[in-house]
Length: 439
Ligand code: IMP
Image (cartoon, rainbow, N blue to C red; front, side, top):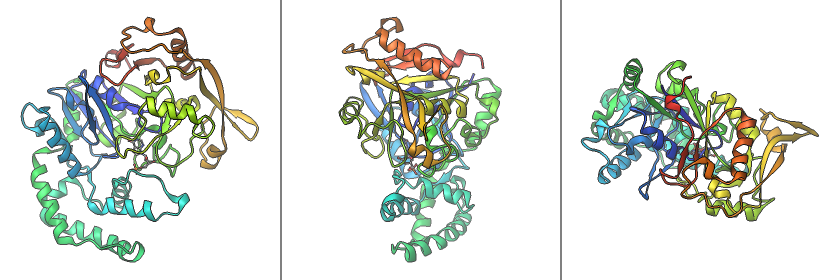
């Protein structure tokens, strides 16, 4: 039984916590897209760990964590995380026995980060994407343009020299003439990345083969998505998206498996919505209900784990969530952070969009339509000052919160399988276990 977890909104839904929880059930935890633009926060025994690249299942002793071919891989960030985890005593033996990277993953080079920064800095006011400036987009561009550097290239001095010199030739024209920025020197870059290759060597594997062997032996696998459905390059709010397929389909190409490898797909959503970066957000309440937005941001600590940016806040958008259910083939929902809505008099839930005088339950394809869409809300009662901390069973939750959950389930027509009522591992109500469900 294998499970994929994906963000069902615009990222930051709390995937780190869910992967950490489900990681206990899996033998193998696989990241398949994105890179260190992700920021997965875990709180175990009161200790906070933020991971950007290494799968969040790493905190479970003995589990093998893989970074798949679909990930864009920044080796510097990787080694920072390895060193930090080593210091924290997470690895029983050598780190490379617990975390391995695909030979086919594409490498983020300093010029990718620099391009990302210059583009964001020099973009016209309406042209900024609001990226994490980690070089993610430029690295994926090079991959698609067939001039990327793969992890396996770091072990081949001659091939790396050829590939790097070809890649930087074009980049240098851009840096020099378009951005008026310093050009890249081949030799120091080559030396630096060959050295990185030496340290990386024991971590490099054909991860696809490892996953296939686990599949054949019926060992449970967890596929760990990053970012969120609405940031998907094909299906998200383009161009205000990330550069990978964040939907569950991304797991197939990004890990090297067929669709039957995934039997359950769990979508993570908060009880409200947040977004970082630019782009349309129909249920945003920063202008319409600023006090509530500020309250949710403060109570929910809604600041980016990667960049520290304040997240934009809004009500739960069921139109967008239904779209995520369909795109990902979701079989269950992990409902996060409902505790943050404590003390609100009423909860609004968007059930359709008003567009040109009509109510529509569909998420529009055109960015311009989405920008014009006005949310149509159902209003549900809040649960007052009831503090969900310490609650162990669903029946101890206030009726209004249970009614809110049922409303969401009825609309989406899939069950809530997990409910998070606080940041800690133990502050979770597990309603059913996707690893023991039939597909
Ligand atoms: P990039 O992935 O750095 O290119 O950024 C593209 C868009 O995706 C921006 O709006 C970012 O804020 C957003 N983004 C990227 N990674 C995450 C994430 O892990 N959580 C939330 N938003 C993200």
